[in-house]
Length: 393
Ligand code: NAD
Ligand code: MG
Image (cartoon, rainbow, N blue to C red):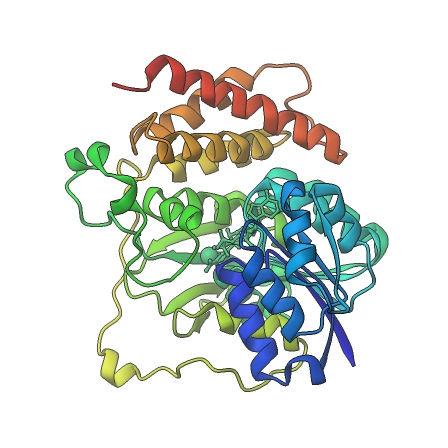
């Protein structure tokens, strides 16, 4: 029996993974080691009971009593807090999904790699904040990372066993998010509710807003660079409103191999779960005749300054990825709390990067978790300071 763990089980990606486990035999087919969640204790407990998990962990220590109570009478052990999540990530499992949102996903992901495990990685923030550390840890311990972000799963599948040397460039697509067609002067007045709707994908609120601002694509360009080791100038972004083509690999001989599929995360998660095999998945098959037309356009960096910031971060290297991610998370918190406007998020992130550029050590890639988290914190403080100076306008 294959053993699996899911971190961030109660989120959007986690729910999709849970759905795949249930549909493919549930507790009779999979040995579920650990599941983690946040404040939705009822859902975490329900998942843990149904899958007969060995361990259920909530990120919130004050909710441990509640979790123990709801799981009373079952065989599921319970624990709580960030350290408990890392400890659960250290429990042997054949396949572990990292579907926590934000830099909080980095410590448990690293722990999986340190035990030489297979890490299905939805948490792109890990690679943005600590690409060198994450990839180096995997290599040192013989661990494997399988990409779960849809574009990266698409590149992985399109590349197959092809040699990167023969790849001229890689293109990832972007739907353009909620404000793709808004007049530019309306963007600064965009509300949280307006930014929280996505034309094609049903996702958690944070990544949905990141899609509207294109910070999600900015993170994904860096994720492509770090995971596949492709130079920044060979990574392209194409706006593709239908979200059917997820990525395309263009070879030196002029041939391009694209990956197409319905916008449903169960494909990328299921692909990673079954890799290197393929299995039937509950994903709608494409009917291109019914779709009729697929459209593409170049991204506009005036509308989406995040894309320019991603290029600057890749050019800077060192701790710039950790700073970008930390500042972006802080700016998103400030937008969600009504402290800054939608368009201010890019300003706050750029200000944080400017503040930290030139600080001693910034040009060195962080070699350990503590250093990553230190740059993450500094960037958050810097972005928060920008919001305090410019917010409430
Ligand atoms: P979500 O907000 O729906 O779920 C996040 C999960 O992480 C929840 O289980 C939550 O309880 C947990 N969590 C949140 N903060 C935590 C913390 N500080 N410590 C521990 N656990 C915490 O998010 P999502 O949309 O499922 O995205 C998860 C990750 O997958 C993100 O990194 C996102 O960028 C990536 N991703 C998501 C999608 C998608 O379709 N939703 C697609 C590609 C990549
Ligand atoms: Mg994606």
